Length: 524
Image 1 (tube, rainbow, N blue to C red):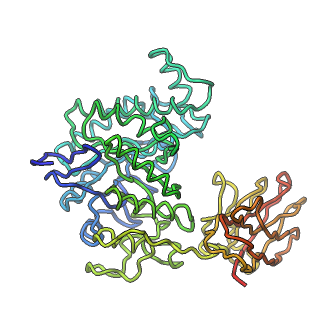
Image 2: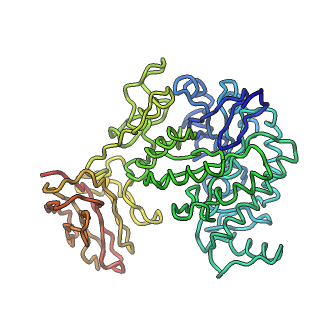
């Protein structure tokens, strides 16, 4: 692409910088005016402290500045709105020639509605209607329209396939009245989702372009940014970006689409997505991804993101600069739980000695030293069996309501986990490559029950082998109100395709709680 461009441009599946050179993003999500209650970045102070380390030491060329328009939202986004603060963040990164993707987190998992004051889910007020949301975007974007290093990410991870979402009947009625459009049944519908996605983004983008705003605009995938992409139906309405990109790109220039593939452990699925985007000539990035502490699928997905980035020259930003669940720097547990990017032990540009698995990959990537194949993360047999950090990951806290940390309730006065009354399952997935045919494994745990009718609670270790009809497992049965240690052995017979730890209460209606701790697994 020749000549000098005023703005970054997106065309033919690529992104070009203002000088017309190919641009591949790498960076992190950072705090804007509101994010998790921390003021503008660090727990103490602002991300403005980190311009140098982000741009000069880590060598990032893009950040996603997470913000909100809301004044009175009742959940975690209840923070003041500061145009000036965002402006200072953008100005600082612009001086370093780092792109700031200003992103609004207000509508995660939903869509704006057509009238103000509506309720979308769990009683959460969404005071900005589509019209107010659009006006707010135009007002903000006009302040940065002459800065090519300011991009605008319309909304975070819109839509969620849940029939209780209020946007579903409201938008169904809207399209029916608009042009007689109807959708089968009364519940969530992929086509409805894709149609709402198109209408909302077209409405906002159209207003911004009409106001003379030519900067790149970023559109997150639907389904919490993950898409319901199916490799067998790559151009179906299960990916709002793939389905709608040809229509939106026909109307507007400089659009970049964004996938957030936390659970995409299948490299084949990600290659199919990249090939579909390539065939359409669509420019896109990974706007969020990252290895969550102890969760195997997110580590596999992170490997896949870096693989795709090297194969197709696709940009990526990890989640996030201010979140210790991303293993950028090791702290408490080597290579499992990480620290913040500014905690590196060397800040002179030489490679830090306290980088984690992912931190090493990212450091090498920004210096052009990362090559395929991406080094695999080697998981321990079992993660976080003693809850010593007061954390639950990677135990499956279904609906954020199945288990909890019970502070000081273990038999030695430390923390343990509680399977709550009325809940009957939790567990964690294990790395199947760790288990070898013919090897014996010793599984143990401590547990106790509580309540008038506690029933029998179980903790088990199971593996599924290649070609096997059912899972091989050993189960520890607990029924005592006193702390008890139990142990069992399992010999793996064949190549393992999946492995797990499970905690199970057969009598879900017992109303009893079950405490468990010091879950351990080792090769005999």
